[in-house]
Amino acid sequence: MKEIRKFINGFKNFRDEYYFREDSPFIELQKHQNPSTMVIACSDSRTDPSLILQCEPGEIFVVRNIANIVPPYEPDSKHHGVSSALEYAVKFLKVQNIMILGHSSCGGIKSLMENKISDEDEFISMWLSILSSVRDKVFAQYPTLSVEACTACEMAGILHSMNNLLSFPWVAEQVKNGNLEIHGWYFDLKDGQLLSYNDESHLFEPLTLSYLNVKG
Image 1 (tube, rainbow, N blue to C red):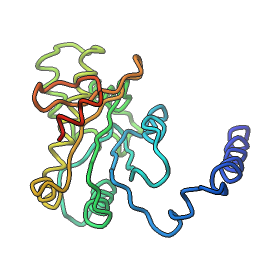
Image 2 (image 1 turned 90 degrees about the vertical axis):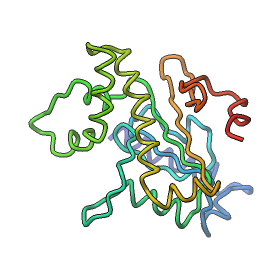
Image 3 (image 1 turned 45 degrees about the horizontal axis):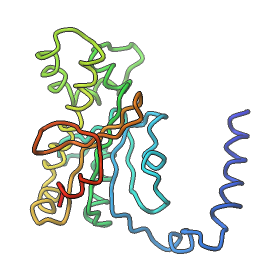
Image 4 (image 1 turned 180 degrees about the vertical axis):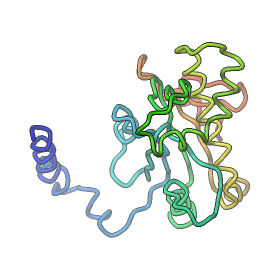
């Protein structure tokens, strides 16, 4: 119960020092939300996008899942958590940016690369199979499992999800009309560095303010 006690104390501090302060953003946020950006990030406990990007409440609409994956557009009778959140962000919140935020040392990508299926695995392997073609392409370049191969798969997975975003017709339409931009970012846990995908060089490069000039 030590951890739970810490969380309770944390919430008390949040209320006393943040929620009830005179300039608290929750004065307006209790009425509505108007985030400019949707972030699709990994569920990894080390990669909280609000912390990494130092965001205030209400600034980003966040979806987290294993390996920060965006599935392809599949309108059927099954349950689609990521797709429904994406639809809400684009159609109703009308976000101007969608960011795929991947990271190094991703356990989901490592599991995908190792291709090991646990007897207790009911959902994970099926979810990761969305990136099976990415894994195969990486292994064509890196014959053996290595840190370099996993890094390549982590980055290629971001690009795959960016492409999957465009399979949603209402996402593609907003991008075409200039109302929505898609970003691929990669957080390097080892170096504490944030990289962004450069459409011109086709590489992930250190993120700087010059990125804003490239994106217009």
